Image (cartoon, rainbow, N blue to C red; front, side, top):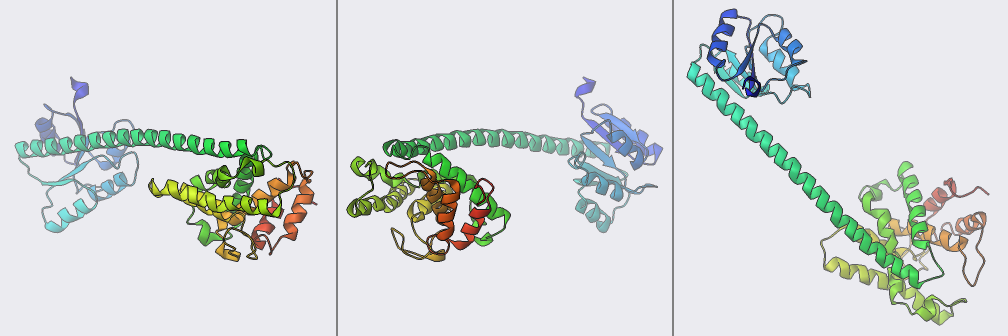
Length: 352
């Protein structure tokens, strides 16, 4: 059928050449004889050909200028262009190919040779199209599969985090709230372009979600201590403090049985470092200042703020203003002073 034929634009300012070229091609292709590059661009607004056979030496706009315009236009740059020209020197041929032409056929040309070259190039373009479609299909399948795996992993990790929170029944909603606070702190840190070198290495898709495992080590703490209705004794507090190191161990075991992943890296650093203090008096390692991972320093503020404003059997919930003042007082001792300043500017914390 005529509609199934490939479309060829034959562009030449010589009417005799157009007539001869159409006679050669008309039995196999739908041919558009075109007298100038300007007319070609007008026609391109309505018809996209499968190939353009383009003369070089034409008035108004020569073939070199025409192909330059084709190749910078997203609508036309993929159209294969073959130069048909009487310019046979190597320099002209090299220039044409350098500008993006797929072939360079000298006039006068053999009918059988021209047909074979067109056939070969169109077949190559068809193969390229098939490969693009296959690649797009594979990418879609991989993306779908990846999303399924990520959703499954997130569901499993969320279940673990919820299990910890379920056992620690005095901190309901803590995981979700601290994630929200952490996100606000991170967003402001990025907006202010502070600690830019450290944050440039972060994978933002995984940083905040990884915080849900910050207390995963509590899964190994006795219910007697975890749910004690009063304040912990010094001995009990020492046991409770081990949850940070236990959390690191749990996450490391997951990492040993899986490929290296930014989610687990962020989770390990947050779990192990969110109880460290800027002055070095925290736990489990007693590191200080910038030795504490930045994501853990951020989580420390989110974690303490939520603990301060939340109900506990041994204390009343503080107001946001009271909690802000305690964190302000911890600037440079418990908390990173730069991060405290960021915390105090956030709109979700009422002003004093």
